[in-house]
Image (cartoon, rainbow, N blue to C red):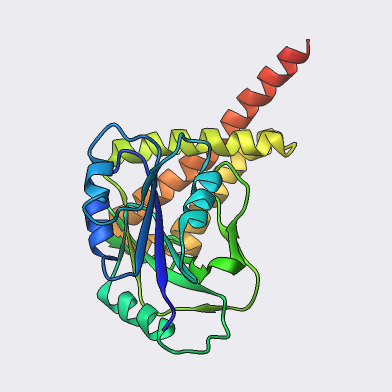
Length: 255
C-alpha cells in the first residue's frame, strides 16, 4: 500500500482548520505550513499533527511548494483549510493507494462549493475539477502569485467522489476576497505585460455574467446563482480596473 501525505497552508483559519483536519485524520501524514497566524490555527493544527511549520508569507505557490517539500510520502493530497474530504472520497483515495501498481500520476477531484449555506450546482462551480492528488515526485506548484495550480508530469485521471468547499463566511468575506485576489491578479497581469482597454471594463464583466448565469445555467440555483454570477462579473471588473490603476502608476513613475 502506498502512503499519503496531506499538505495544507494556513493563515488565521481557526474557524475552518479543525473540520478540515478531522476529515483527513486517517491519512499517514499531515503537513501544515502556517504564515504566523494570530488566532488559534497553529494550536488546533498541533492537536492533529506534529508537522506544523511557520514561514513568513511569500505567495501561494511558494508556501505550497514548501509544504510539498516537507511531505515524506509517495502520494500527496493538497487541501485548503476551507475544504473537507468526504467519507466517499476517503474510500476512493484509499482504494487507489491500495491498488498496488498505479499507472496514473495525478488525479482531478470534483469539488462541490457551498455558498452561504447552499450547494451551488451550476454557474461553472460544479463539478469544479481540481488536480489535488498526485505523486510527490511528479508534481510541483507553478510560480504564480495567485490562482496557483499543481503541474503534474505524467498521466492524469479523474475521481468520482466530491471534495467539499465552504468558500465564504458571508457576503463581506466574499467582497474582501474579491478585492484581495483582484489586486494579486492585476499585479500578475502587469508583470506579464498586460494592460486594460475600455473593452475589458465594459464587456468582459458582462461576458462573465452571461457565461455563469445563462450558459452555465446559474439561474437554476435561484437567487444564489444570481448572486454568484454577479459577484463573478464584479470580480472581473475590479481586476481590470486595478490593472488600469497599476498601469497608470507605472507610467507616472517613468516620468
